[in-house]
Length: 125
Length: 159
Image (cartoon, rainbow over all chains, first blue to last red; front, side, top):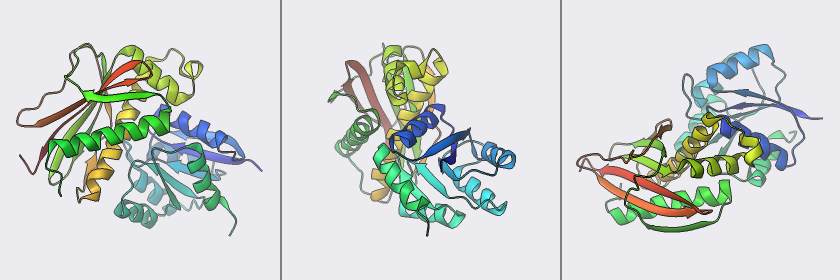
């Protein structure tokens, strides 16, 4: 069954790059929703909580990635959230995981690299 | 932190740009040669890097046509780009963000503890960055036939 994905990134170009990469990676992706920052993403989820997967940038205006992840978890949203970001240090990874993120993909990425990371996260336990 | 020479910073800048152009853009790349700050470049994507011992400003400068090619390539083709100038600027800003992130990763490996700013884009000729009491490395590239200059203006240990 096709999954519904929410892309959270302040760059419209990067949201389109992610959309193309998701399709090229061979994932069964259906609807793709977009938000330009964390607070906008919370609004998207409040309108449609049936999102199956969230890909989220780190550095964004208004509400950054880790703050969005923490806010989404505090509101009870349990879908996987994967950080897709230029941030890559162990400290950053731990900060994202502590906030409630499920995975981490470092930019730059290829569709294959993104797909491999997401398949692991989307596999049923 | 052990970044203390222009050679180190130049190498980091070159590796960061090459890594992103090859992986995210897949465009043929020639260079780098030493650049001089071409005043005929008309668009610049910029991002700041700040840490306890390193402060820098990255500038990626190109022509309008070069910026259009970079953005179109990221998006998967001219037809995806359309005529929206904001998307062209966004693409150049995202390239600056990607390269800045790669520089940050290199510097963090040697204890840089660097924070990255949000990217911004300047349009118009003569936007060559110059900051007093700072070092500067400028590298000139040919990206799929388009001239691109990458510059990093920086200070280390407050020097």
